[in-house]
Length: 230
Image (tube, rainbow, N blue to C red; front, side, top):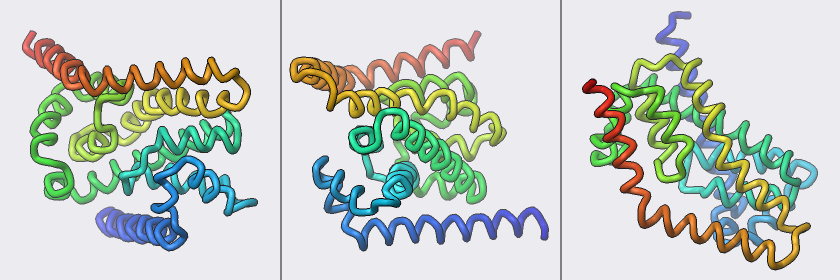
């Protein structure tokens, strides 16, 4: 079997897999449950003794299907399974989902990326990804202000080797998920005032991100572009 045929077969299998996951979530009421943490906990618990598998599929779908807030579902997973199990499952799902998105973009090429990614976002990131590839992707995956899943698509149409992209994703994407899992796993054991402080800190970070996220993002991109000109 030629390489092109292998790529096509892999793509078809991927499409079938994603379509199957999306259908499963839709038919079992996931998208109705995702609006409430209590309802989401109940939904995952319905799948006992296979709730860990369902949690993995949900976190995987948060990357490849969207819009599913993986940080919120990570908190719910930590409440159900504990910090460490929820983090390991979430990290594995997000990393594998990132690689699937990257591979699909690599196979389908620029036309696919242009159709899926908003033109404004594509113009904003494409040049800096191409010129400052590794450093920009590492920073973008670490900061909560960047659209990680879209960057996986745009990275797929660059010349970055898959192994290097895998290493970057593995070293950077799980950190924000770890924070969410720690918050969820500790919510049942810390006093109410500690929970209130954590919630207040989370709200403050969210508001700062909403107000200054674009400014931070612009400064990162401009700094990388200036380094390119040196």
